[in-house]
Amino acid sequence: MAQIIDGRAVAAYVKGKAAEQVKTLNEKGIEVCLAVILVGNDPASTVYVANKRKDCDQLGIVSKEYALPEETTMEELLSLIDTLNKDSAVNGILCQLPLPRHLDETKVLEAISPLKDVDAFHPENVGRIMMGKYDFLPCTPAGIMEMLDYYKIDTNGKDCVVIGRSNIVGKPMAMLMLHSNATVTICHSRTKNLAEVCRRADILISAVGRAGFVTSDMIKPGAVVIDVGINRGEDGKLCGDVDYAAAEKVASMITPVPGGVGPMTRAMLMCNTVTAAKKQHGI
Ligand code: NAD
Image (cartoon, rainbow, N blue to C red; front, side):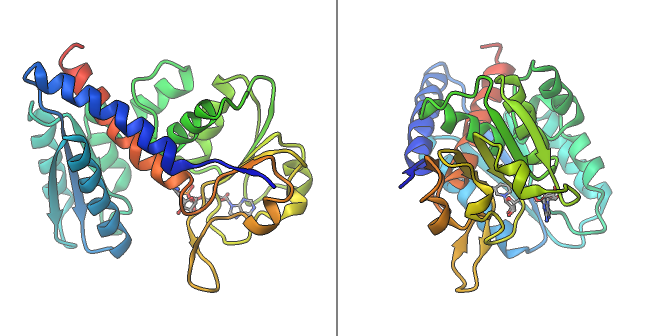
């Protein structure tokens, strides 16, 4: 049976360290503040924003929420971002995605100051990640790297397969594994012989968004399996991309869903906010 990679435990550890840093900053008279913008009433986004508020409260980070109506215009949204960019009391700015369809996501992400871009979606930060010289990393890939580190999973020279090539998960994930000396393959919807490619992986990371997508025949015996997917199974329960019951018999280590990557994503947002505050105060 595979060892469970306990995302909740690692997230608690990471958040504990972030809370200590917040306390140290507070002692210097510096408050740490995250501004979260939510446009519209998407139910999942509303839950995510509420969770971010809870995490901020837990760590002593000031959270400011801007809930804007669905019909908000680009001008209004960009004007708010501009105000927050200029507000020295705000350290991190996050615009919850997805945005309503009439809003230009790229323009919105580019409007957030790279210094306050705690999601690391600004092209300047994306470029820095490519170069391996970054202040912020996107929260989900960063959280996965933290988990690998916590469990002392060696990435050097390992074959890593990432399924998914999104800007949020797949691409930055592959880049981080490359920086940590893995030999990386990125798979996507047009990849041929997917199962065969995945079976080469010492570390298999799935970010597809389809329940039961990764079956046990795609996993090399002894591989480390990281499941990023968040889906509803046929039973209505939350699940990942990986057929967990079958995979845990083949893998050496595996992240569960829930309780794996998700808590780490939340924790890394807090870390990025603390990093932003420190940078802005020259610490
Ligand atoms: P996305 O839809 O942008 O990307 C999905 C990727 O899967 C695409 O790059 C696509 O090429 C690939 N794909 C689709 N069908 C495939 C196939 N048949 N074979 C191989 N590849 C295929 O999604 P995303 O934003 O990257 O998110 C992926 C999943 O991760 C979703 O379930 C999302 O909810 C979840 N997610 C979880 C967290 C977390 O914190 N746990 C964070 C972000 C995303």
